[in-house]
Length: 101
Image 1 (cartoon, rainbow, N blue to C red):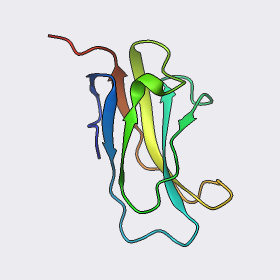
Image 2: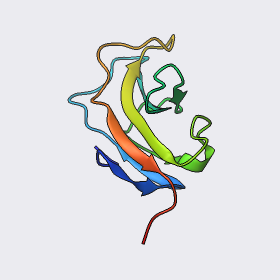
Image 3: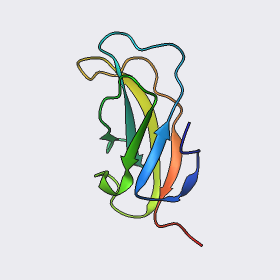
Image 4: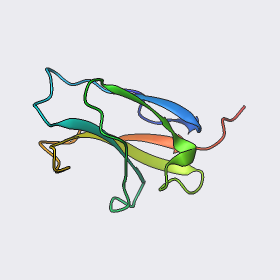
């Protein structure tokens, strides 16, 4: 999966990728969820991704990212009613902010 767990600091356009064995059922889609560490109720959700296992996301436009810091992300599968189906992927951490060095 990308970005790697603990990646950062990163900002701007970031390539997210994940693995999933097999294919999705009819009407199902992937979504990337991002939220501030310690605030699991405040999740941002990407567009539905049906055909691929990757998505570019501009972190500067993610509404729950309000300041530099640690954020968590995962991938879920949702049905056509946007209900989560099965277990979410492993939660990973990224640090949002300007690159150092």
